[in-house]
Length: 341
Image (cartoon, rainbow, N blue to C red; front, top):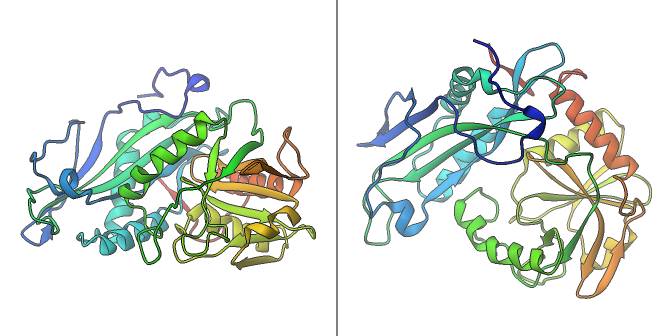
């Protein structure tokens, strides 16, 4: 078998059904051994917990072809741990970290011909997810659950290079104090859809959400963490109990300190001080870093020194270094790269 006959260069960030996916069911207090299946459909009760009370969580990660021809995943153990934490918060059974990583490996191996070749800019996106599958009519956790992993080849998030975007300060809140902002629950994304569509209709690429308590501090966007570069060229990372712990952000912090020798400060960041920063980026699995050219705060524009034409120099170094590690061009820290053999 060889690579699928796909025009890798024309891929967008969308769903394409692949050959196999992994499924494991939780019943009578235990997960079954799990298996790969060709069946891409999900059959559940009309009264399933996921449909009635949104009892579901998910993850997102990628498999790549490296410069030397290996197929690898980037830090899947951290995705596994984050799903473990999400499940606990949603009163769902936890899926063991080692089994999560094994399920990812099985899914990639079963769809190896869908992993785009090195240099194409494309990758194989993996979506592990879990949901309450048994009938629930009263407000309580389901008794049965399903864990699944599917994959789909996707193109580069930015075709032709990463152009800075314009974002707005949102009037909506992303998460409540002591709520679920720190876990990857489907319900967090459902409540953000109206806010992001509103932003798009107004001509903005994304929302910046402020802390719900005082609405003075930077939190994150609907789908990515935020990072800044200060006037000394060092990294400043907003800190909050309701920010999702992004694996990309954590990796960029390590890259900044270890590879680039930058000082990194993780702290509360006030909206009022953002105008003093030189660069801003949104970081996540899909794009790694999306550069921000300016923020619109209810008509007031906060502009960054890189402008609207290109990524700032520090963000570019961070992006080049992390993608170099992911693609095998640079040596990775121990444990960051999971080789699919």
